[in-house]
Image 1 (cartoon, rainbow, N blue to C red):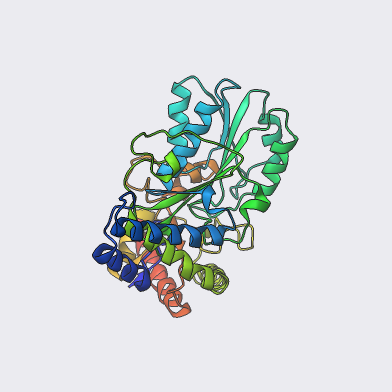
Image 2: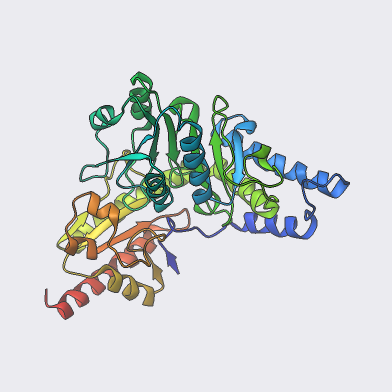
Length: 384
């Protein structure tokens, strides 16, 4: 099997699975319980929190565990919008955000908030001057995706924060880091973001667990109420096996980050070069330098149908995606590809490849070979 859909989810490392089995078997106490088993479980959760906090170089008190990226984004955006609503009701985001941001913004529009959606260029980057002009006196929140999940564009968060700091209203900055956490090199402190969301299953960890960084200068209120777990921000009994699995995934990632990121970047360039050499009438949609994620490559195979191409490859045990897994079952075309001014025919023929440490150049060679056969076959059938 050649799995190239690692943006949708990743295969958990064996060490992560082993740690979770151990937790399910022995660390099954409720962390809120006062007896020894509960206290031991609470200690394991604390250890995992320290591992993740150390990787992000933040205070562990600034880290809150959640069920994943969607919940983290919802907590941040909804809580910030409510907390500062008396100051203003203007909020800003981009046209290429993940649905877990865009759909919250749509909800807030229905609640009386005014939203500015920043356009992007053909490579998926926002215009910083446009952001400068968009910030008003009543702007309270700017939410920006760090790495786009479909085309891999890496936004200039430092530049965005500088603009915010110079503005009159100085809105809060939330960053959706689901595809940047563990994939690109950055410092939350240097970027000076207010909130940052991430997910475990994008870094060879378990599904159903993630986290939210909240800068200590910002105090947010919960959007769900209950037993006041996670310092009162996120009520509900902690997903202990998930948290321990996330901690183990981050522990390994901390050691392997540089080597695995370099490997992914080499594969990305190798695959792009190979496709351009062996298949005609294609377009690379992702930049091939350090302004995009090393793990993501979007390619348009003109005069084909991406969904048909996907199933051709699946027959050869190669797994790819046509768009974000969170929207690929929908009936509408990718809003990200529309935002970069791609025509409908090109959108139809676009495939996303997402790499991992397990993929080899031999895997890429075989994939390109099968891609060429599939593309030629589809074009002959479609008469294009």
